[in-house]
Amino acid sequence: MRATRSRTARLDRWRKGADFRQIASASAHANLATFAKAPRCGAARKRDGEPCCNPAMKNGRCGLHGGKTPSGKQWHVVQYPDCSTPQGEAKFNRKLRMQKRYAEKRAAHLAVMTPEQRARHEAWHRTHKPGAGAARSTERARARHNAEIRLLLSGEAPCRPQSPEMIQLLAERAAVTAELERLKAATIEADSDNKGIFA
Ligand SMILES: [Zn+2]
Image 1: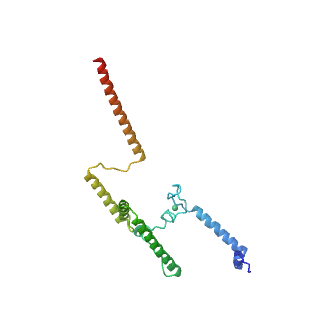
Image 2: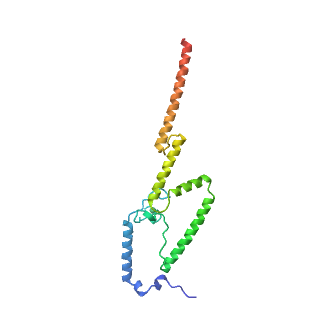
Image 3: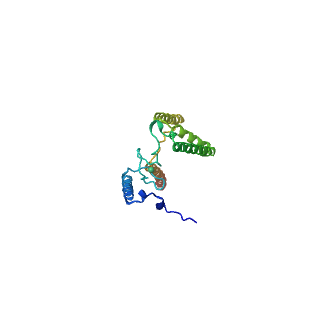
């Protein structure tokens, strides 16, 4: 049986030498220092809602939180790699397979949706189309106007999303109003009793 050679034994003479080790160690330390100084991603992480803290990319987010998503006209448009090298081609094919898998997953997800979920999903996708932002903001404005007009036509007061403080204040007001009504009723009752006695 042949003994397996260690990883170090497989390295060439230069890489086993003290000079190489010194250069490699200095470069590793420099990389660590750059890593430590890099700006951090501020996205709220799922685990505890604290900032993510991975090193940020150019747009201030890490690769997991939108750092890789192109901005402007390419916003959420799928980016395909250059196929001129074998590596590029492999990457391209991998990406195609991933797209196919994603499409299947999405189809399965859509198939089990209730009509309301489906409507909400479609409304979201109408206002989040990939590409330049102008079309998206126009669509959002149109949807907002439509919603306001529907509300006006239905004759209901406009309902804005309320803050927790507002909801609590409204609840307190309702409680105070109820108490006031109760006290008024009690006073009227007492008055009528008094009349009964002193009349
Ligand atoms: Zn992040």
